[in-house]
Structures are given as structure tokens and as C-alpha cells.
View 1: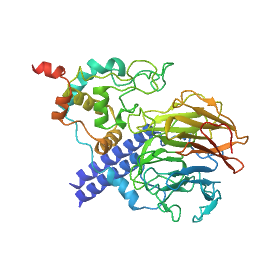
View 2: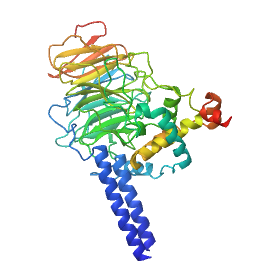
View 3: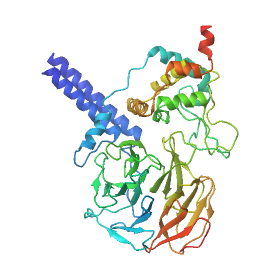
View 4: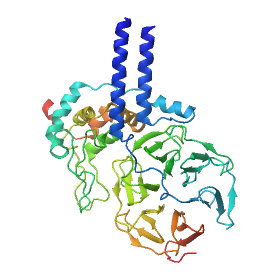
Length: 187
Length: 291
């Protein structure tokens, strides 16, 4: 009985948290729609692989920290483009928006880079790392970034990933990505 | 066992409370919002519906339809709106079905799948019916965006069954917003907002709202040419402004002589404006002459 009460509390706590984070209805009638919103949150994100996290942390410090900050804090005034339309590097921690993107999009951003359409310079807004990092290393560094987010942000990002796609399959990624540092190490 | 359960239960309650507090602080949901309803927000609404080549307009309380062939406005029957509620936005979904949506403060979101013959609420997944702006996705038929006063922007990707808060919105009072298929987004398009501080834009992954150029006052309405997504129009008082580079620079583009409260653009290149006196005027893309 006590175990059942405990399970009930856990479930209720989970619903309260997920309801707030997902904007579930309150204040007017319950419906199938509201139930549907709750159902979205019941699949929790899987635990992070700590080996990947540690590998990703090292890669982050080597390749990413100089722009995005040692703790993922981003550059000052990162939301304001300069006169040429270049955006400063955004935070990767809970203050930024990295957690709003699926694994597939984050992988593509790191691998191929990205150019803001209002950037008037010749530079990419986010440089491409496909010539410097292997597909495994890109996965590792994204996995590390997930340690910088709140549980609610991790939940959101997990759901985005389920809807919009995860990391490319290792075989496909390894054939489409040039060799990176990990492969060099293996050699 | 009972002792252990109670201990664990108390711990969970404390953790849940702390998490809720942290989350509210993080999302800003507990903060006073810039998007609270006010008299300065959207007055009336206007939309072009391409499937039947018709215009819909609202004065806030009633809905009217005019086919391009007919030229006469006919009232669309609605169930009585709740006291104090008003229609602030009319939107049409992409795709063959072109579902019609009405939204507004106190009203929530209504959906019609039969060109306005019947309506149903699709706002049960929103935290309240204080919807101050609403937009349908320009290419994904089931994706909708709603700005809820005091909360932020909610997105549904299944036609309004489930809603999820995705962003706080720009640091300004949003009057209207639209979704555009302008290229260059990390996700699937861009949102442009008409606000009391000018026009703002954000990719629809919500990676940050940025001012879209400089306009000389509060923006009452914004719309875009679906055939030329870099070409947008904004209404500031009686003046229309036009940009051809996605909101980087704007130029004055004529005035109908009366305050513009809402804008709509057809795929055939006609721009429509709802005026403060209730008239709807139009002009072609290459003309500055209103009819």
C-alpha cells in the first residue's frame, strides 16, 4: 500500500512537472487534448552515457569553448547581431537555445555549420567541423552539452528528437563524414 | 517500510517543489508578461483564403466573408462569443483542406473544417483562452502557433490537439504574428511579429527574436507575399511599409489615408488592408494606388 502511495506521488509529481513544462491546460475543462499533452511527457529521456559525456567534455574544451565559453555561457550580447549581421556565439547552457533543437539538427549544425541568412559577411555563422571531428566525436560533444541543461529542457529536447530525428546512424555517418581525430587516434 | 516511504515521499515533494520554482524562474512563466492583453493590441482581423479565393474579416466580434467574384460581404454564423472576448486573429492552414481558425483574448482558438459552417474549440491544451495572437504554419497544415497572455508562445503540430510552450516571445507586446516560408531557417520557416516596438523575426525553432529592421512606430500588422517571402509589408498608423530583404530595410509604400489595422496578401499578388473605419481596400503589387 505504501509503495502504491509512493508510486502515486511520483506519478503526480511527474505530471505536475511535465504539465508546467509543456503548458498543459489548467483553468478550464479537461479533455482528450489535455490528456494528449500529458502523454507526451511520459517517455523520459534516456540516461546519458558518462563515457560519451567525458569524451565530449574534452572535445568541447578543445574545439568549442573558445567561442561558446568554458562553461557554455556564450559570448556577451549573443542575441544581438553586429553591424554586419554576424551573431555572437550563443550559450549552450540553460540560458541558450541549444536545447530546443533535435539531435539531428544539432549534429548537422556541428558537422556542416550554418549560415544565418542575414549575415552579410562571407563567414559561416557557425563553422563546420566535419573535417576536424569524427561522427562519434560530434555525438560525444552533443551528449556533453545535454549535461548543461535543466531536466525540463532535456525533456523538451528529447521530444524534439523523437519528432524531428536523432543522430545519423553510425554506418551512414561514418561513410558520409570525413575521418576525424578519433579515427586518427585509432590508427 | 512505512517510515521509509514517508521519508522518500517528503523528499520527492521537496524536489518537485524546488523543480517547479526553478522551472518557473527559468521559463519566466511566473513573471509579469509583456504580452498581457491591452487596448493597444490587435483590432479586427483579416485573412485571404486561397482555396475558395475569399477574404475573411472581423471587427472583433463578428466574422464576414467575401468571395473575390461576389464583392459582397456576408456574415459567417458563429455561436455567441463569450462576454468580453474578441476575435484578434483569423488564420488559414496550409494545404488542400485550408482549415479556418479564429483566435482572441477570452475566445481561445476556434477551428472550422467546413468553411465556417461549424466551429470547435481546440484550446483545451492551452493554459488559458487569453490568446492575443495566432498564426498557422505557412507550409505544414497541422502546425499552429498561439501567443497566450502572461505565458508565451505555444505550438501545436497536430491541428490543436496537443500544445507545447516553445518560447517566451519577443521582448515587446505582440499584436499579431505570421509564419513565413522565407528560406534560411534552421527548422522550417520564420515568424514575424508586429509589436509595439516594431517588427521582430525569429526562426521557427525559436532561437531568439531579433528586431526586423527599423520602423518609425508601433506596428499594427505584418504580412508577406507568399510568392516572394523576402517581401513583407508592415502597417504603422496610416502608413504602409515594404521590405524586399526579409525585414532588413523598410521603405514607405503609400497610405490608404486611414489607419491600417490588419493586412493580408493573396497568392495572386494583391495586398489587402483592413482600415480602422472597417473598410477593406486593396492594391496590386506594382501599384501604390488603393482601391
